Every structure is written in C-alpha cells, then in structure tokens.
Image 1 (cartoon, rainbow, N blue to C red):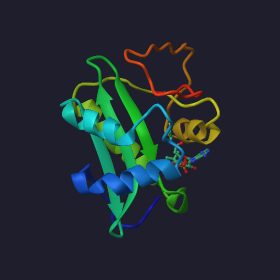
Image 2 (cartoon, rainbow, N blue to C red):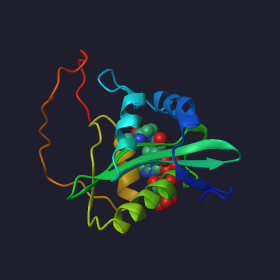
Image 3 (cartoon, helix red, strand yellow):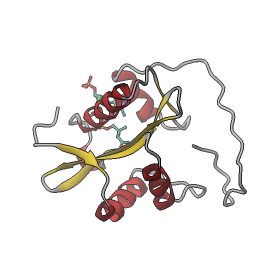
Image 4 (cartoon, helix red, strand yellow):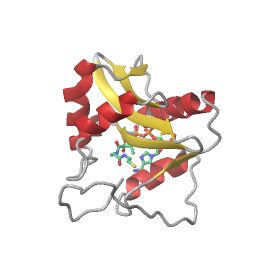
Length: 151
Ligand SMILES: CC(C)(COP(=O)(O)OP(=O)(O)OC[C@H]1O[C@@H](n2cnc3c(N)ncnc32)[C@H](O)[C@@H]1OP(=O)(O)O)[C@@H](O)C(=O)NCCC(=O)NCCS
C-alpha cells in the first residue's frame, strides 16, 4: 500500500497532457480511440467520471467510471510503471467503485484485452471474477482503420 499522501479528484482541463501521456505509456491507446475525445465524451455525461490520483505533485493513477442505467463500467485504469505495486491501482479502483455504488450501481463490469494477463491478475486480487460472457460490439459510425479490436 502506498504511504504517499494521495488525493483522488475529478479530471481537470490542465490534466489532459499528463493523462494522455500516461495512457500511451501504459499501452491503453489504440488507433480507433482518440483519448482526448474519450475524455470529453466522458465529462459530458452526468453518470460518468474520470478520476485522477495525485501524489508528490504528480499524476499517479487514472480510472474512468460510469454507468449505463444498469451496470457500472471501468475504463482507462492506469498507474505509471515506476509507481506500480504500491496500492495505487487498488485505491483508485476502490474510489471509482465507491462512487458508482453511491449512484446506486450494484455491479461493475470491465473488459480486458485477452493479451493483458497483468490486468487480469490485478483485478482478480481486487475481487473481480471472470464471467462466462461473450462480448459483442458493432460500430455505429465508421471507425478509424485499425487491425485491433477493443473497447
Ligand atoms: C493494472 C495496474 C493498474 C495495476 O496497478 P498497481 O498500482 O500496480 O496495482 P496495486 O499495487 O494496487 O495492486 C493491487 C493488487 O493487485 C496485485 N497486482 C498488481 N498487478 C498485478 C499483476 N500484474 N499480476 C498479478 N497481480 C497484480 C498486487 O499484488 C496487489 O495485490 P495485494 O493488494 O493483494 O497485495 C497497472 O499495472 C497498470 O497501469 N497497467 C497498465 C494499464 C492496464 O493494463 N490497465 C488495465 C486496463 S483493463
């Protein structure tokens, strides 16, 4: 568990470069997702939030959370490589989960790319289970060309 004083708050405009940089560093940005657009869309909706954690004056974690009127969802959970293993991921996911619960959400879902075994291990430690579901998706507008699939 990290002992550095940690402040978890909502994203502000001046966080943009640090957040997008962190997501690139963490391999969370794929060709069909524009992170700045994703952030703007998240912030425009009352039932979604982008949380950032600060410690030592630096941005040390992010988590995007929201609900669709039924389930809660988590996206863009990220901790810089040099800060991992100190409890920051757990703390921001717990914060996002508590926020969703305060809105009446009973269950949180998330999607992990199959190759991301580290994230599976992390969420398993936080009490998340792999459930036998098949995720299906369809673009409602033409996506930028990308060989990858993702959320
Ligand atoms: C996944 C990620 C957010 C974890 O952040 P973190 O700050 O290192 O995680 P924590 O230190 O809070 O770890 C919480 C628990 O998960 C465990 N854990 C963390 N990473 C793990 C891994 N790769 N494999 C197995 N367990 C892991 C920790 O040991 C800890 O267990 P404990 O509390 O029982 O001791 C971070 O590795 C990351 O940013 N990865 C790249 C981005 C990513 O893949 N995000 C998820 C997208 S779906």
